[in-house]
Each structure stands twice: as structure tokens, then as C-alpha cells.
Image (tube, rainbow, N blue to C red):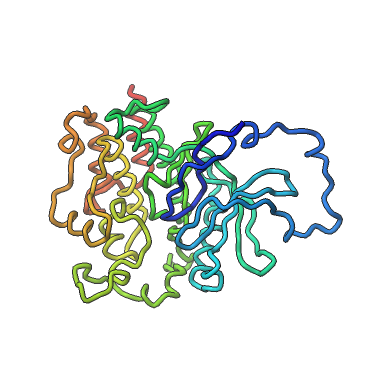
Length: 352
């Protein structure tokens, strides 16, 4: 019998999935029977007929996420495609291909496995991935906030810091391979049914050419992205041009908010720091839901300290120090690498 669980999929952008009715046992992890394993493939396989029984899970701003049955491998998987109105948009096509390939190329235990990139019968792009069941860090933090405690279910402060450490491992791997995530937030961290930690949504990833690391983002095809650094307070400039990058402002670094091109791996270090702050305090570090409000709150206020924001949470000194170094508004004063952040986490979790 099925029951209500959260179905978490890689890269659903700004769309938040509601709890859906999806059978966990036995259909989510079905028993393997010989008749399923021994079905012959057609002599002339047609990939256009490979995926069947689609069920829409979420519709994001640019993409549609579905579950479907892979008839070749006899399993249920995740299928992602551009929304109908964007399927012929060259900028969105380029971004979609970038996302699929970055997700596939970053083969790490903390990234979602990618299965296939292809075109459907109408020639439109899609890619398929592992369908993962679990809870996001956002859901865990919301439960913690409701109970005003870090001890919710199998989670406590130690486990939450371990989750953040694994996120750090994934980002360090990405950084050493020339990729910056640029959209780290609680919604994009998944803890699976087997306690695996996955970093989701590489659709905002920044990569470089091998020629002097010259930036060639697909957004360069969009004239809005041709702007040099601009004054975010200039109300004569449309908001979309003041902050063309897609992301979640409260978790974005100051440099990413003001100039989306002027970022490096330290923007991910900052974003991870905002997660540390939220784990420690059960409060968002920077208030505001739009770019301008967040920028003003950063400019006009001192860097917040977890222990002062949440004096009743007994914030460990070492974790506060890590948080403050990661979230320094001046990136030159943050940690130089994610590896250092990981080492700091592990020192706290495994003291001598």
C-alpha cells in the first residue's frame, strides 16, 4: 500500500514540490523478478518508445519534471525537459545542455547520477536521472523551527553539520573540476532514504573555457547579460537587468548579487556559510526575498553573529567561527578553499 512521502528530484529550480502520493514500498524499491530481468529488447530499439507512463511531478519556471518508466532497464526514473514555450529558445537550450552535462560530468557520491541526454520524437532536448526519495534540508529545518530544537527525528546538530560537511565535499570536488554551483540553498540539499546527501540543481553552474578560463556562459547569448557591473540601487534600470542571474537572493554572496559575472568558488563558500547560520540559529541569515532588499540589508547592517541572533540555541564557538569566516561580506577574508571548510567541520565533529 502506498502512503504520502516527499518525492525529491534533481534540479527543479524555484518550484517547490508539495507532498505527493507516491508508493514507497514496494514500488519505489521493487522486488526484482526474473520475468522483468529477462525481457528481450526489440531487434531495432526505438528510443522514442523507451520512456512511458509519464507522471508530472513539478513544473518549474523553465522545465517540467516527470517520473516515467524506462522500458529498456525496467525501472522508474526522473525525466526532465524544457517547457513547451521554451523548447526552441536558444538561450534556454544552451542552459539546459550545460545543466545536463555538468550534472553528468560531476561523478561524485554527492551528486545525482545522470542516465541519458537526448531528443524526443519532436527533436526537443530531455535528460534522465535517478529518481531520489528523501527530504530536503529545507524540510528538516522547517521541522526544527517548528519544534525550536535541532533534535527532530534522526537529526541533531551533529548530523546536520555532517550533512553540511558532505555538501562541502561535493562542492570541493566541483571546484577542483572548474565548476561553481552558484545556487546553494536548503532546497538544493537532499538527504535520501539511505542517509545519502545529494547536492541538487546544477542549472546555475558556472564553468569556464580552457582558454585562460574565459567565461562563456550561455547567458551571454542574452543581451541583458552584456551589462557590466551596475548600480543595484539605480531604480531607472529594470530589476531584471539589475540582477539578471537566477538564484535565491538570501543565500547569494554580495558579489553575485551585484555582478553575477564576478564570482568564483568563494561564492559557494559564502552560500554554504548561510546554511551553517540557518542550521545554528534556525533563522535565515539575511532577510529579504528580492535582490535589492538583500543588498540593502548587507550594506546597511553588520555581519550577523549566530550566537547574538539566537542566544538560546547554545551555538558552539567553533561552528560560529566557521560560519563567520564563510559569510564574510569581503570574499578575500573568507576561507581560500572548500577543503579548509571541510577540515574545520571534521575537527569539530571528531575532536582529538
